[in-house]
Image (cartoon, rainbow, N blue to C red):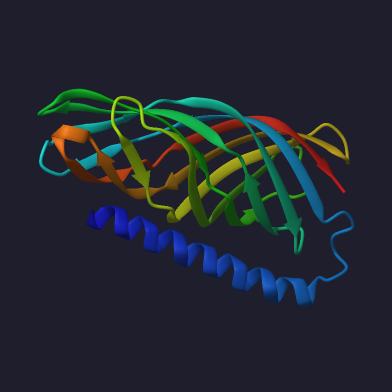
Length: 218
């Protein structure tokens, strides 16, 4: 847990530093970026790195992978500094495994984790343009089907994100993009299992998100 807190603290510090530097850079380079908007459409594979602390019955959580589309919108404050808003929604199958009750199907739930990242772009005029980012997300859980239990409730909440990627330009307008993100998402879950009682769990979802796509500069 201390390692995870250290990573999250580092992500916050990195994002705050980028945003602070970007603000200074914006004042100094207000006319530097001719086309400050970059919109990308990606296909992403959401790969949960899940774990759970389940009360009373023990066991662990299992959350399915999912391939979905993702839209992101970036604004460049200068050639090197940008902010990116990422929008995607992804349904997952959920189960509790190796519990005292055996494996329990918890149905499915859809996540909407809008994420805002501060980015540094290393080679904004190069043939290959790598970047890194860090930021924050707020995850909404909705469209919940409880499966074999009476109900499952997921608490919405904040998380953090780290990012690395590369843009490869076809020309001055269009780009090929490869992107990897690590999101640190946790939720408190309450399961009403009927005759078996109500069970609480602290679930870490912590997905890796690997994507490829096309971008357009405006």
